[in-house]
Length: 127
Image (cartoon, rainbow, N blue to C red; front, side, top):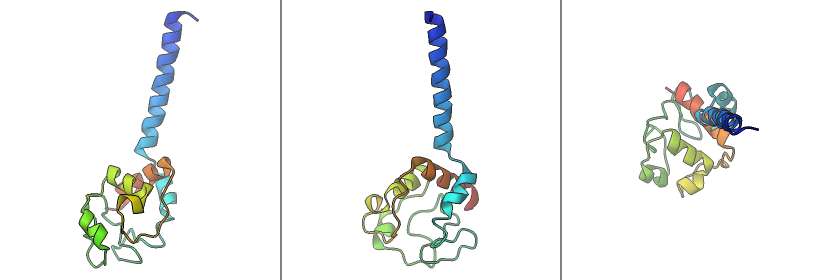
C-alpha cells in the first residue's frame, strides 16, 4: 500500500473509532430507559415521591443529600456533590467507593455504556 493510501486508511479508521467512542460516551437515552428499570424498584422518576431511595426527578444538577422528605445517610449529605454526568458516572461505577458510608445497596454498574446510557436517560427524563 502506498504511503498516501495508508495514511488515508489510518485517518478514516481513527475517525470511525473516534465517532464510535463519542457516541458511546454520549449515551443513548432510549437504551438508558432499559437500564433504569434496575433503579425503578427503589427510585421514583416522575412524581418526586420517595421510596426506598430518593426520587431521581431532577437529580441532574441537584446536590447530593438535598431531596426534600428523604432521610439521607450522613455520608451523602457530607459529600455535597452536584450530580452531573461525571459525578453520576463515578457514583454508579462504585457507590460505596465513591461515597463510603452511603446506604444504597446496589451493585456497581460495571459497564461504562450502561452508565452513559442511564445518565443520558436521567438527563433527558428526570426534569
